[in-house]
Length: 298
Image (cartoon, rainbow, N blue to C red; front, side):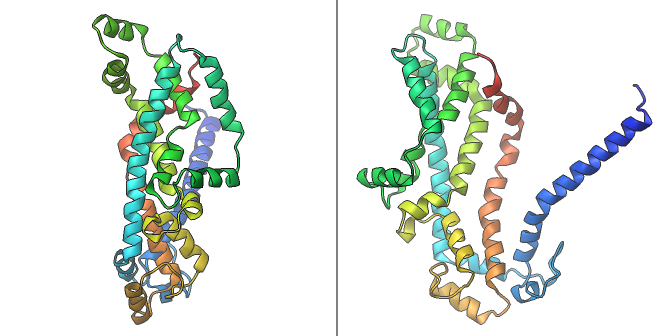
C-alpha cells in the first residue's frame, strides 16, 4: 500500500473535519428538538438546554398520546402513506411498462404530454376547482387519486424496464404468459431496488405533506398529523380555542404548569418525524442501485 504524503494526509484530515462539522450541523437541530421534548417546558424557557435534558419529564408525550385528535391524525397519516405509496408505485410502474412497448400507438405523443406536465401546471385555483368537481373535497381519496401517477418516477421505471434483458419477455411469451402475468411475475420481482427507492421517496412525500390537506380538507377527522402540527406552530399557544388539542389534553396542560407550547410542539415533531426515519434502514441498501437507474443511458 502506498504511503500518503504529508499533503495527502492533511487533505484527508481536512475532509474528515469538514464532513464531521457538516454532519453535526445537520443532526444537531433534530437532537436538540428531541432533548427539549423530554425536558420540562418551564425549565426550557430559561434557556441553556442543549445536549441533554436538564429536567427530564415524559409529560409532553403523555399529553400528545392522550389527545384523540392527534392520535386520529397519526392514523390518517399512516393510512395515507401506506395506501398512497402502494397504489402510486403500482400505477406508475404499470404505465411505465406500457411505455416500453415499441408497438404502442402514439407512444411518442403520450411521452410529450407527460413531459409537458412536469413543467406546466394549471395552478392552485384550477386544481381546487377540479378536485371539487370530482367530489374529492373532505374525502380520503383526495390523498390517493391526485398522486397516483408521477411522471418522474414513470421515467425512472421506464429506463429500468428497458434495461432488462429482452430474452426474459420472449421466453415468457413462448411459454404463453400474458402481459399482465409477465409484469407481475417477471418484471416486478426483478425491480426491487427501483421499487424500494421510489417507494421511499413517495412515502416521504405523502408523510410530509401538510399543504394539500389544509386546502382540500376541513373535516378534523380526516386531518393528518402533519397539518395539525402546522396549525400548532402557527397558533404558538395551547388553549381550548386553538383547535389543536382536545378538552382533556387542555385540562392536563392547565394542571401541569411545567408544560409549555414549545415543549409540546417539540414532542409532536418527534412523533411526526421518528416513524419515517425508522423506514430508512430497511431500504438503505437499495439506494445506490435504485437512484442511479435514472442516469442510465437508453
